[in-house]
Image (tube, rainbow, N blue to C red; front, side, top):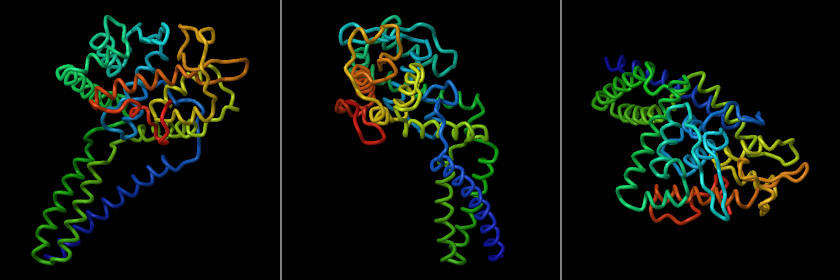
Length: 324
């Protein structure tokens, strides 16, 4: 009987090991691949991409990049008066999480479709306002996950995962019994079962289609990490790159590829997105105004998420550099 229990446990453990090895190989292909894409694989909210990549929770970068995505997509616009920039609602996005956060930003935090950065500070300075802010972001995160399910990129609790949980329960029972029969193996089995269950809980839950989509986004992310000013860039492409670089924490890569200049009023049109770069004939430069706007917007949302945070903390990107 003891040997039968050990054999059953080993059979289940090997099955789980095969699953996790396949998962590790998939993740290795995502993170250590070398192929690149010079444009996004689709017109997708950066926050959806981050959630697809397993990023849980909401950060200031999430909200800011989604807000910039609204402008780049024509759902909102930017206007500038002196050193003040505000966002204007134009038309609501057609995807559910976008529509939800759009309404909250422009009509709950903002005033009748107009959102200033200072509005975020005012809204979240009270305990009630901050509680409403955090609750709205929590609901938005849930809607992002539901949207990924609707796109068939993610499943939250698939059949195979239910079976995996049942098999872990069986392994746990077997290891508990084996503790009293073959103590050393019982301890080993218990530790192995717990570690395996922790790995299962952190499994991203991507469908095959979701894995392929995420692979394409990682190829585009690699392009942003290695972006070169010598590449052929159109104004539209630079705008798009800025939005996703803001979401992915890769603004430093753009700062390394393009010079940063203080743009004059004449070099920026108030109806031009993103107001973040200007072009001399055949050249591009990031405008200082763009980086200031990015920093100020992220700082405002970060203050709502983390009261007492130091201004500039939210602007730190994945390279450890800070947007200036």
